[in-house]
Structure formats: C-alpha cells, structure tokens
Figure 1 (cartoon, rainbow, N blue to C red):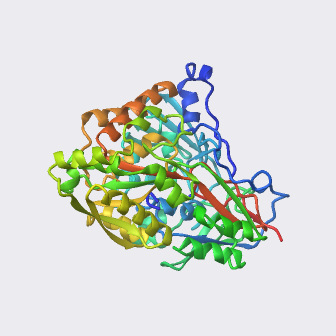
Figure 2: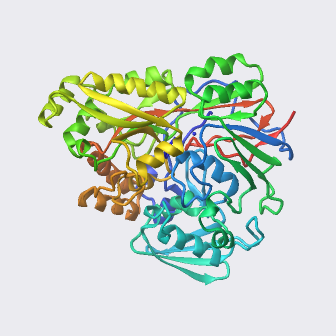
Figure 3: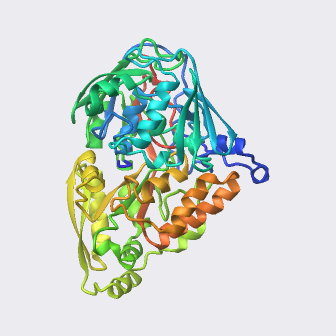
Length: 534
C-alpha cells in the first residue's frame, strides 16, 4: 500500500530505565516499539527456524504492487520497500523485533547535539564497481535533501551541511538536535545509490538502479516482474543467500497466494485474513502473523474545498465504525485505529480512544454546522484488488449513513497514489495505508509537515504542530519524546487531519522449503536471511 507488509515480540523499555536514558541510549531506542503479540496465528513453533543456511536457488515472490520507482529518493509508495531492500543497504539498520537502531553501512556517533559522525565500513563497493566512500555518502545525503525530484527532503530537513571529514568519514552538521536521524538513515534516506550511475542515467535511474545491497538489478517489466541476482562482491557473507529473486507483480492477493499453493511461487506477503483457511488447508505452506505499524486510513487533501472545513473531517471520523471495519475487512485480525500508532507502540496515547466514538448523530450535526445538512459528495482514490474494493464498499456504506456520498476512482497503487499525492491532486481522499516508519517523528513529518509528499494539499499544519515536530526530534529522553508525541497526536486528531481505520496484522505464507525468514515490526519483508532447502 501507499506509504503502502509471525510471531514476534516487541520490547518495552522498563519504567525504571526510562528516566535514566541518555542521548546515546535514545539513539539505540529511536523508533523502538513496545508490547506483546496479540492474536498471533499459531504455526506450531517459532518463526521458521533455520537448519543451517544454504546458498543457491531463486526465490519466487508474489508482490502485490508494481514499484513506483526503484530509486529510493524518487519513489512514493511504501510498497516499494520490499524491492528496495534487496538492492540497497542502509547507513543505519534496525532490529527486526524492536526497530532499535544499530550500525549498517556505517557506525554513527554524536560528539555534540548538532553533529553526527558517520564512519563508513571499508571495502564496500556498489554493483557497478565504484567505491562506497565518504564522497558517495555525501552525494546521497545532498541529493536526498536538495534534488528537485527527491521525495525525502522532509526526512533530512534538520541537516545543515554534509562534510567529508575523511576518506571513510562523513560529518553531518545539524540545524537543530535530531534524535530521530539514525532511524531516518535506516529508511529511504539511508539507502545508498551509486553516484556514478545517477550522474550517467539521470531520471532513467528510476528504472535502472545501482545500489550496494545483497542483490543487483537485472530487469523490470512494468506490472509484470522485477528480477534481481546475487551481488558476488557483496560485503557480507552471512546474508544474500539465494542466487536471485523474481518478484511477480500480482495485485490480486488471492491469486498471488494460489500461485504459491500451486508451487509456482515460494513466498507471498500481506495476505488478507479471509484467506487463512486456504493457507491452513495447504500442506506445503507455513504462515506467520503479528502486529505491525501498517495503518489503513483515509488520507485527506486539505486543500480541497469541502475538506478544508475541519467539521467535515471530524464528521467523517465520527461516522466511521472502526470495530465493524476490522471485523468485516480484516476478519478480526487487526486493531481499530484512532491515531497513527498502534497499542503496541511506546508513544501510543490511550486517551485518544475516546475522541471519535462511532456516533452518527454527532457526524450529522457537524455536517449541518459545516453547511452540508443535505450531505455532500467526495471523490476517493482506491485500488482494484478485491480487498481494496471490499474496504471501499465498507467505508462507502458507513459514510452514506450520514449523507456523505463517495465516488471511487480505482487503479494500481502507483497510479492512484501518484495521482493523489503528486501534481494532479486528483481526489478529495485516498483510501490506502500508511506502512509505518522506524521513528514516529518520521511518520508525522512525512504526513503533516507543510511540504511533505504525503501531505497531499501541502497545507501548513500550523505553528504549534510544526514546533512539536521539531521538538520530537530534539528531545533527548524517550519519556520526554512520549509526552511530545501525545500532544502532537492530539492536535492531528482534534484537527482531523486524517481518518485512521485499522492496523492490519502482517500475514505471510511461504513454501516449506523457505528457511530463515525473519519478520519485522514494519511488516515489510526483507529476504536477506532466506535460504531454500528441499
């Protein structure tokens, strides 16, 4: 889905430890999630224990969306990540279970609150043979924050300058302290592309990517297949075990699952809960499920006339029956969403549960006060797959009860998302998902900052919210950050800048020959530890 994923347990910092946390501790916890798995689907043991890694074979993946771009800086769909991680390593990485940050291509340190030093690991090269050194890292960070085509400018808004301080060392000077920066560099902004290839290809790099990840690019047939093959000189010996990956683009998830059941594929992700019986019936499949940050929601274009009125947006939130939505669209394998963070997250604010109870009378009252006593019509972008159509039908019926008529325009994820967030601004709303980010400041900045890509109307959110976004990245202690996020989330929801619906649990199905798969809290598959064993 738009930015648009097992058994897992996320670790919550002990109460007694929180107060004593230092800046260094926070760097390690930037983006940590909390809680324990609820509603985990039993699979007869821990997630796919590996009986010794084996090299070789081609992993065949059923992917539910065509990439918007294979350039991490220019793409605009959360569903891109599962492709991008095969091609690109990141400067910083995160723990699969907790999203705690740790060194990736580089070790990181903060000699002072406004300086981050990246010490790049030696001996790493891009797939085209060029060296991944300090100059290459500077090129990437400068491109991410300055290039006209970059969609990650908001991620790097705290960066004042990037200096080469040694052959393998980069010093990042900050406009303000930014405790979220390590987590930010574990996402798109930290995916290193080959400067040589970008300079040679220009915009063509979108379709001819060159990274430094476990696999290198072979081909991309739009809406059909993406193929990658193992990078022989990859700097890590313990991952990138399969010879290659073939991603077959199959938007209809039931079809993708059936391909795996039939042995035509090995792995399918984001399987809808309604298909659990099909997985259970198949003797050659494994499944795993657990909470994620994947939030199904209605995005608003606040620049559209009707949605510029806060009472209309509030009315939509009151009209939504989130519990019914979870039961009808997710077969109960999910969690009603009243904000952009799930209950398992350390910054979750349970007081927001009471803000928008399902109340049709209140929704009608607000619409009348807004001047729409007789209702109104809104256009909504959505997707053509069966589950998106079902979600659209549910939302249409719920809002119809208060006089809001919805006209849905459907297409592929990249098409519809591009038409909503890009230059066309084609619809009033988009029914899609926010796929989560390692740190909540990234989520709120990317969706609500004035020039953020996912702020479709590019509307200024106001000084208080803008200041809180900056504070959330400057605060040193996780306890202080939690209080900032509580204030920030309350503004977002009181102003009804979004209408969250549900957090969808991850559900993956794979052939029994797939070993070593490790699910993660973001709910977006990585394949680096997978091996194939007959």
